[in-house]
Each structure stands twice: as C-alpha cells, then as structure tokens.
Image (cartoon, rainbow, N blue to C red; front, side):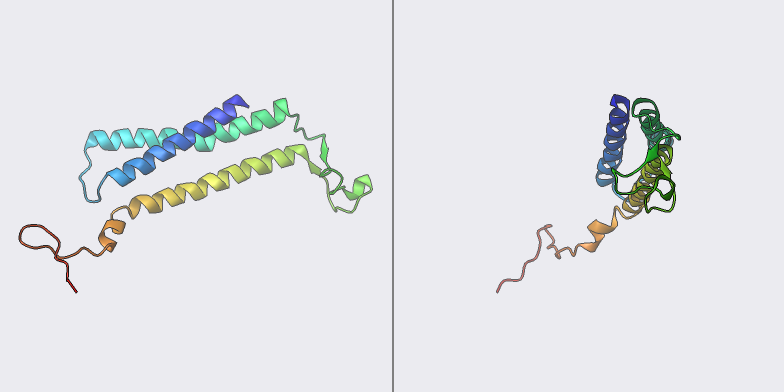
Length: 147
C-alpha cells in the first residue's frame, strides 16, 4: 500500500513540475541540447512511473495483500450474484478481472492526463497573446481613455 501511494505521489509531483515549468517557460524560447536531454529523461522517467510502476504496484497490492485471485467470485456485496451461483447476473466476475479492470482504468486516466499535458504545453503562449493589451505611450505607460 505504501509503495502504491508513494508512486502515485511521486507521479503527481513530477506532473506538477511539468505544469510549473510550462507556465514559467515562454513560447518561442530556443531549447539547448542540455535542456532537451534533461526534459527527455524527466518525461521518460515520468512515463515509466505512470505506465509501469503505478499499475504494477496496484496489481501487486490487489493480488498479494488483498487476495484478488481468479478463484474468488465477486458478488458485489450480494447485489451482482451470477446465474451459476443462483442469482440474476449473466456471468461471473472474478476478483482477478476486477483488479485488471482497475489497472486498465489507471491506464486510461493517465492517457487522458498525458493528452491534457500535451495540449497545455502546445498552447502555453496562446493565453498571453489572447489577452488584449492596451496601447502604450512613447514612455511605455498604457494609454487609457478617460470618460
């Protein structure tokens, strides 16, 4: 449990670091080789965490500590009883299927978050350009119409 929570926290903190850096870095700034290499290593490690370590830690927790095995049938606390067990539901859901479904949901959430970060990074300079700036005088002060 500690490993799962720690891997999620490290992933969230690293994703927050990307968002902080995207707000700080203006669009059109040239990237040096060192910045590109450091960014690639950072993003690779983040992808390794969110697509490798977090789902692995979930599956390890579910299968080892919570005993989500293939021989245990999930009955939904008496609400989803399979027809083979005398209920109404047309098929059996095992705990292994449940843990794998949660892992798939983890992948889907991270994939959506990754796309949101791509859109945020590509549009980071457009918010500043979208704001209408007031015309300035020769001294650099904004010209404001009185009245």
